[in-house]
Length: 305
Image (cartoon, rainbow, N blue to C red; front, side, top):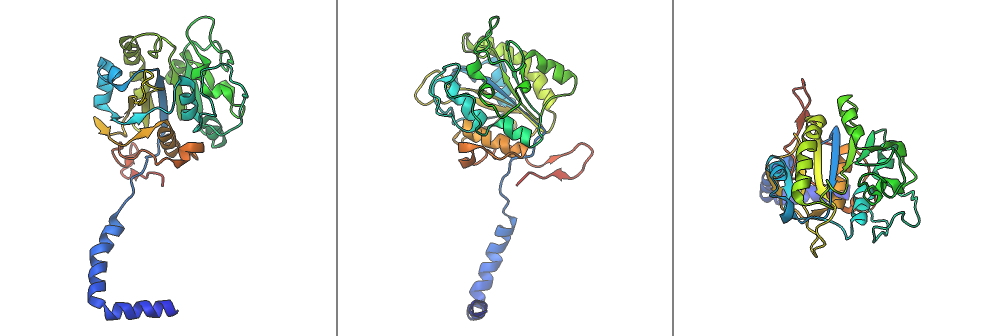
């Protein structure tokens, strides 16, 4: 009560100044709106291998993707070599891994990860790995083809359904049947991902395989193309491109981000709690066009807080 009286006396004594302050500041405060990540129906993440941003951004198809999507001038991987980066993007932690060893010591883990988060939230997910021997395989590599388990972080956890780990050929069948999950990771084999082969080879694979994915995610979905790490350079700067209807066309974000930031953004888009170090990151908000409208709906879809 006393505090209220003191406040009234202050306003009465300084009425002119106080009213000027309220008039000039209140509209700005009321009109300020924090940028948000839109709620998305589908997110597909495609991970390539071991190339610097400068090595890949001018390849013909990749360049067209950059021109029509949103990309980053300061996106950095987490570590060297490959495996810790996949774990970081999947679970928000490298899990203490510093090598490409397979199988890893101490697995399986029960720490939080995207697969477990999706399943506990009733969200469908799948990982499609090229040359995976069979669904849910724990093999470190395939006897035929160029699959590598070090690029499949979900294999190291025991709190998710390994039946969601599928050969890449299942993606075409799922797209044809309208069964695209809300979250999908796509892992090309070690030739198509530019690990063993040069950039033009990987670019040709992307030109053939990404357009159907971009079509399939629809107006409320995105396809993220990223590299796990750069070509062992000290800065570890890589190219990451986000394609799809919700993003600004040809936009290049100057914000410094990394795999943890991307994971946080995916969690925001799918209404999942960000795990481990991704929870410390602010989500990516500058690449989005704005509120999305449902087909046949004249009102914009609200972004999740």
